Image (tube, rainbow, N blue to C red):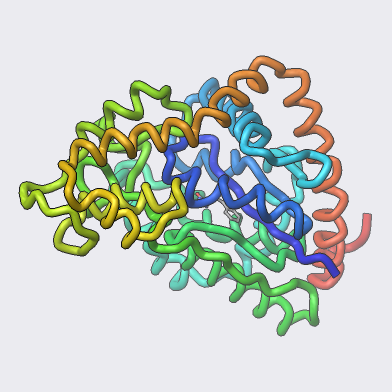
Length: 329
Ligand code: LTN
């Protein structure tokens, strides 16, 4: 039996090359081997304030980025979360089985709630439950996510097991495909922090759709150190982060890179790295700009995706409703 893969990105803010390396780039390789569902998590995105116009634009953008990165709608199911109502429906049932205590311990909730304490909404608190619903609806085997989502995935597993124990076998218990440490890209201005599109400093991140000149400029301005010693270690975190990007885009090992640049100035390495990233992102940038012009096609892809997704989601939800005791309609 072919295994099922589920992953999602939120249509909030522009994606960085961190998002690209951490998730989107790997999706393409998965689609040949597995039954894949790649989703635009718009329901998740409204757990923090959003402009309606921005959600609309970013949702189209994400579908275009999926396509531009080589996902084939004939192989993978590409769809928008709000188009498949079963996500919200299963989420309610799982909410009623989730412990406040466990949700309270979620690191991402603790961090996000500290940022916006003036109007904390309940959606932010139950966000991981909606994510569990996403995953469990499709009887997912594998969930490729960044390390920051590991705790949420753990909750999805707990809920699947809890439901199965209470009502009989219903959900597949999913496994994570957690990104490698070198796949975690840090801020170009502060290598202690993850690269994030919500950083105030525009030079701290590279966007997936940044043009060549912008990429090169940001790499030139990135922080390194004054040791002048080209090496891969934890004392030189800025340089280590840049080398990690070089590893991710070139496939070379850290040793090979250190050997190549050990007698050069950092600036030579930075020029090459900027070019390497720009070259790697060129294809996806160009394809995105083609796809984004064709709204009718994007709509067709998401409509057909939602149709396929809701067929499967509905099968799971009907079982759940029946086991819980809800009357058939
Ligand atoms: N929370 C994730 C996005 C997301 C997701 C999912 C990832 C929503 N539902 C299901 C994997 C599986 C994020 O913000 N990165």
